[in-house]
Image 1 (cartoon, rainbow over the protein chains, first blue to last red):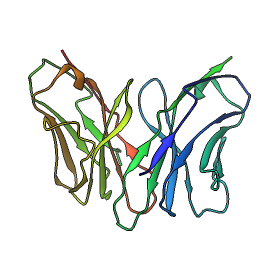
Image 2: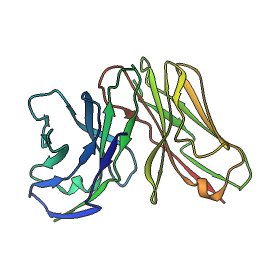
Image 3: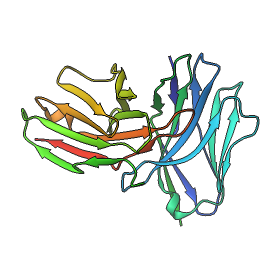
Image 4: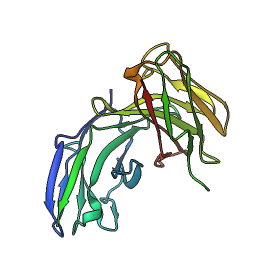
Length: 117
Length: 113
C-alpha cells in the first residue's frame, strides 16, 4: 500500500535562508506522481510542484524545487530564499498510476514551517 | 473557471442532525475527491469518484457517512446523524486525467455541538 511520511512536524527558519522539507514515500508501483501543497493559515490548499517517477530532471517552479531521489524514495521540497509569506503547513502527496485509470492521492501528515524575520 | 466550489463554508449543527456538504468540481475534471482534515488525523481521503462512479470509499469512517455524485458537476457528502467527533474541515478536490494535480475547494468547516 502507498504511504507518505513527513518526519518534521515543525520547522523554524530565518527569512532569506533556504529550507528543505523532508518527504519519504513507499509504493510498489513503478509509475507514480509526487506533489507538494501549501496550506496557509487561511486554510486553502495550494498546489506547488509535481514530480513524475519517470522524470529525469528534478522539478522546479520558481523558488520551489523538488529534490527527487528515487532509490531512496524521497521527494524533499526545497524553498530558496524563504519569505515571511512562506509560513504555512506543507503537505507531500502521492498518486500511484496502477493499471487502472483511477487512483487516489494520499497525503503526509504535514510540516509546519515558520519563517522568522 | 471559478475553481472547485464548496458550500457551505461553515456549518454549525447539533448532534443528531443531518448535514449535507456540497461540491461543484472544475468543469471537465473527471475525478472528484472528498477529504477530511483534523488536527489528530491530518488529511484523510474519504471517498473518490471517477466519471461520477465511486471508486474507493474505504476511507468513509462509518455508515453515517454517504456520498453521491449524480452528475459531472455536483457531489454531496452527507452525515446522518452527525456527532461531535465529525467536527472537521471537509475538502472537495477535483482533477483531470493523467498525472495532473488535484485542485481543492475552500473547504467546509463543520462544527457539531
